[in-house]
Length: 180
Image 1 (cartoon, rainbow, N blue to C red):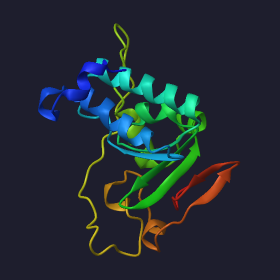
Image 2 (cartoon, rainbow, N blue to C red):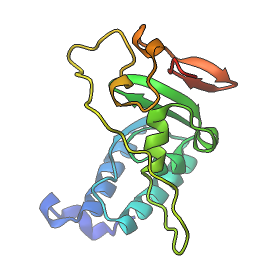
Image 3 (cartoon, rainbow, N blue to C red):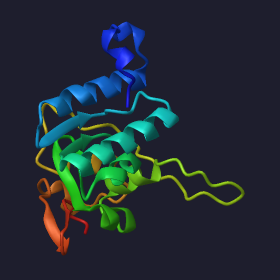
């Protein structure tokens, strides 16, 4: 998506979106099967984000690529993903097909992330945000209990009896929560 004249420019002469396109081109030039993106568009303005997402979707379909997309913005992930895995402190807390996760989030952390997505609703009541309170458990010395428990509005005694592991609650929908 860049003009050939950009080939002779230095990085400091490019905008954020142009730099992202160059990085994507360098990654695709290696002919990979999988590309890992870590907050690939978070620092870009909204218009440039859409352009980059369209470019990535086009490349995915055209070249048969698989993406692993790491981000806190689930609306971006939904645009690309067939499946979404939500992680908290290095542990997967929910995994489901994209549409199912958005339609029926189960884990409190997933619900909070989804409620943080800005909605362009004008003249209507916006859904209530699910704010996360409390302190983050230290990732250095993780206790043998739910990692999200100190921040969860639904914490119960069973949450303190070991770190919950992923379990299938319906076909292809996995959750790590003792309260489900």
